[in-house]
Length: 348
Image: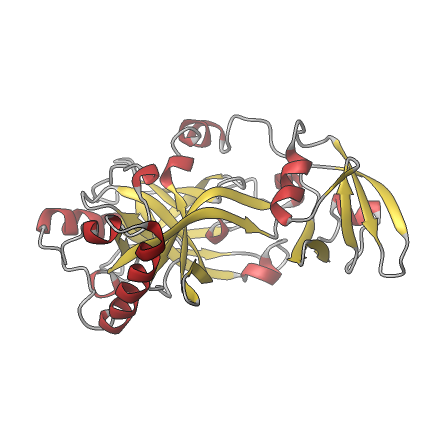
């Protein structure tokens, strides 16, 4: 299938464009099982894209901090981005891994080593222990991927699962694990094999890496399900430092270890990470976060930005909470770098 922008939709006024996209998505969902298999008329682009997308298989010890939420056997995709076997993936696949394998379309497994993880973007890097003999992809510009653009989603399962999808929204994404993207890419129809999948533009250039399934990729007449992709533009300024030092060059953000949920302009504590700064300071499940530095917070994004503003890991964060018993408490939480809390294997 030829990948190209839906220019007719783009020409419509904004209020009509979203309705038109909804209709197109309905058609796309109906055709997805039969016609949207992304057999590009441009054979060169198709072959290059599909050959560069590999499988990522990891084993994580049961003692890992993330074992309970992300599991001990993780499987997803990655994309070859250099001729020396560097593979870009989504970081949660490789976080705290003690074994990493790259699986080719042929089924051959090649051991890989951990290179880097960036909590701010969510990207992860691994390197093959031997020559992959695969071409590296080029980076595109995720900034150019506006609503209604049709793109190619490719994962480890090869041509049968590669799929033409629409960019249905570009907006902020907030994750309760102290994670925030300013302009995530949301696509639809959804693909179940999204973790680490590559998102490609019409020239076969990489524009994003798959992270999540979401039930609200777009809001039209009703929520439209889809996938969230981390834009490749988030990687460009930090790639060299990630390769050289295993992390971005900027000082790490303060991390507290509080998992939150937002309801009617209120921010509740859903969970507190064990042995985290928040637990040591006395934050409890069910607390209502009222303010940071005396400034009221009414959203998860605003709360995160207040914590990170003019601070780095190790700085103290002043948080006011309302307990389930109705008591107001002013807590001083000594933040840390999240990597200090994770049980990372130094041999990787």
